Length: 177
Image 1 (cartoon, rainbow, N blue to C red):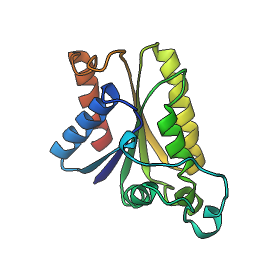
Image 2: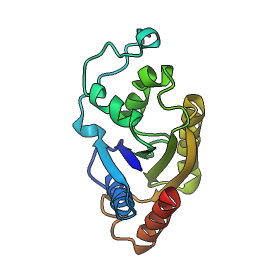
Image 3: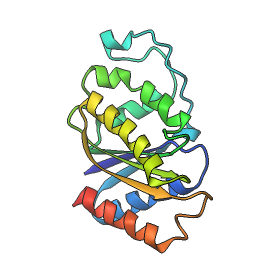
Image 4: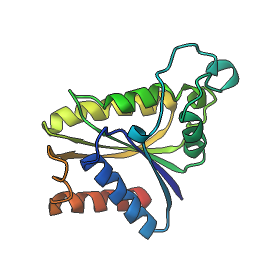
């Protein structure tokens, strides 16, 4: 199984820690993994030209050209984003907007998909973020197989919380199962 995790956090903190923990546990269970840190990539905004709907290629030349094949070659895609104002981060939203070339050719259809989010508010707030991502999965016809929500504020809150670590490990076993 090949797993690609996309981290939409602008900082090195809880979201990145959780995705790395998931991927490490998945490797222990025999998966091949890849982590994409969006903050380290040059990804321009979609300009709405829609040329990708004809030739399935984006007219913008940036790091998305490297990410597209990874997503298409995966068995499971995991998006990770902090929750900001009941939604995903701007990095993650920009990334999602740029997926039109592969969604137009149905390159993500029937692909297993999962989401994890960390926020400082409450579970109700995080659930709104999850609902947004579930809608995205529905639009792209990906198979949404689960989500993980954790509460944290400071960058090391998750890794210093044994209950959160246990939730991450159980979540990973459920994904790979």
